[in-house]
Picture 1 (cartoon, rainbow, N blue to C red):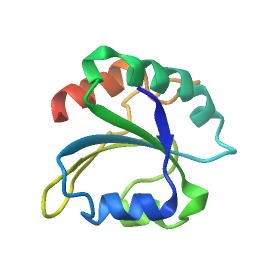
Picture 2: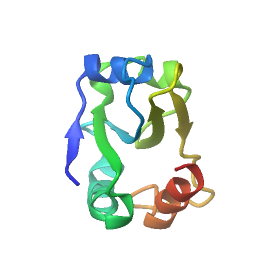
Picture 3: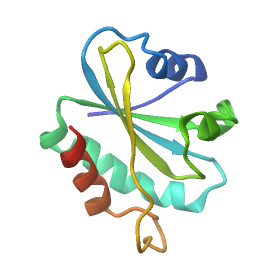
Length: 121
């Protein structure tokens, strides 16, 4: 499934409960200057293309488009991945925990992300 880049306005709609249909969304927060974010791109695309997640919508969001989003959602730095379920009065937002042993090139591994998704979908 293709990964869509979210605008600040679209992200605001998602996190404020503006989507009334039930969806499971995964959002990778990145910064253009973040080497880890760029290196994680291949992993993120592989997971988004996995048939096991055909019903999940994958997005990417440049934190420079909304500089306080990390504070608002309660995460520190990039890359960060969240899972958000829409169609409820208040969206259910889960943040992928920081890895105990971060991958030196991508921060998160395929297993970090897929275990997080399996535990929260």
